[in-house]
Amino acid sequence: MVEVFAVASGKGGTGKTTSTVALGMALAERYDVTVVDADTGMANLLFHAGLSDAETTLHDVLADSAAVEAATYERFGMTVVPCGTSLDGFRDADPARLRDVVARLAADTDVILLDSPPALDSRAAVLPVVMADRAVVVLQPTIPAISDGLKVQEYATSYDTAVAGLLFNKVREDGIERVAEKTERYFEGPTLGAVPESERAREARRAGRPLLAHAPDCEAAAAYRRAADSLAVRDGESGEVADRFRSAVIPEPP
Figure 1 (cartoon, helix red, strand yellow):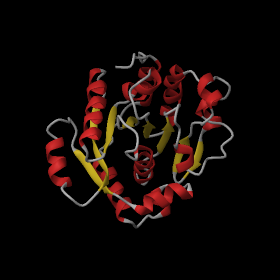
Figure 2 (tube, rainbow, N blue to C red):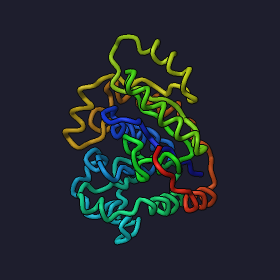
Figure 3 (cartoon, rainbow, N blue to C red):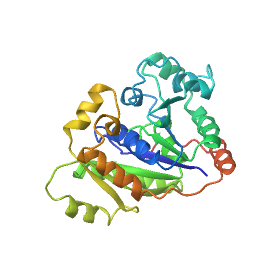
Figure 4 (cartoon, helix red, strand yellow):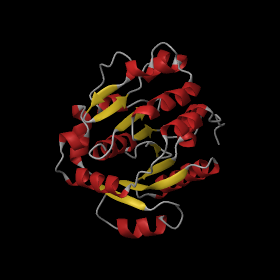
């Protein structure tokens, strides 16, 4: 079985990468999980997964100078494919090769999470959303973040990518239930969870560790686990998924 999720937000600063890694760790308690940093222009996953010194990254694979296997690392119960941060690496990377990368990974895992770029402003940015089976939309409970999340949904569904659900992040105590209820009127997926604003999440980023490893008993970590429990993974045939990825049309940005 395998299902591919794009974790997307439509804007920066929502905690998308923190959410990707946290969902990955929580899902890894039940599934074989692979997390891919598909944000080739502004990579952050390597810092969250303790891989800042990784010698081979997705940039090398997309430049056709390394095999996918050379850029995979076992961390925190997951397989992690980090992306590099150099401008030269970004320049040499061919985003179209991401299709083959995910197709190759699909043969050996149950769940693939694509940490997607925060904006839909290039072919490289929209490709993860277009290729995924479903998207998890990460939102802060603010009008601008919700508006940008709706753009992600509109673009995803136009390419037959469904919305698996909404994940509210950096939530303060006032009024999330009311915001979530209104938001669900406009989004196709359910609310998976609401993760509170957390100093422990900031500490984890500074320490270069995932939140669920740094502070597994904190309220935010518990919220991520509940969200992962709400995310029902579908059973896809890996060969069919691989074929679909390899033949995926590379779209133009909206």
